[in-house]
Amino acid sequence: MRKYGMTLLLPLLLCGCARDLWKEVPEFEILNFTCPVPGSKFLDDDNFVCGWSVLGPLDPGKDASIHTELFQDEGLMNGNRRAPRGSTWFRVGADRSEGAVCGQVSFGKKFEKYQYGLRRGVFYACATLKCSDDHTGLVMHLVCPGKVKIWINGKPVYAGEKGAAGMKSEPVMVRDLGLQKGCNRLVVKFMDEGKDYLQRRMFSLRLTDAAGHFSTVR
Image (cartoon, rainbow, N blue to C red; front, side, top):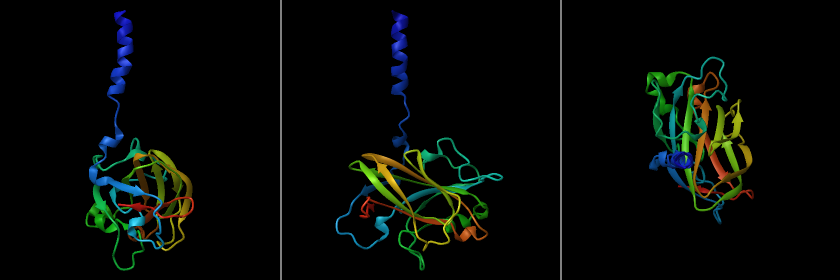
């Protein structure tokens, strides 16, 4: 009987020690997501995800693609991960410099002040969206001049091996996405592309409902 009791107890102990991914997320990385926003007709930065923790640059390796995994569970990355040697974390918000488009997040200059930031590399941008309700049928609008892969809650939802020509390009639209009530991990993996890659480290990302109504992220 004692042996049988211990057999039952072991799974309970293992479950009790299960890793809680949400508790690992730094508080500054959590943003409140609301959708739809009634009466909103003109886009501004609040309609985009503009608060990101960005890690980089990481060596992509020889002949690497955007699908080459550089971390275990890279689709659940957050700002509490230790930066590998030769890379660092930065907190990045909306780019309000002259010439920037609405919702643009630019992270190139943050890294260029370091010698290792000048090399071609891979970057991870992480945010967590907190929702008061479940959302289904969402549409992601993405403009990114680099190679890109995106996860929501660890599930890959989009990958592109060819970046946009510029930030004023038509966005890629990814449909039928969902967010759950509570916290949702959003990870953007960005890989430098082109000879002018130092000037292309930027992207914009927003979510709407199926009818195109805006969301707010604060």
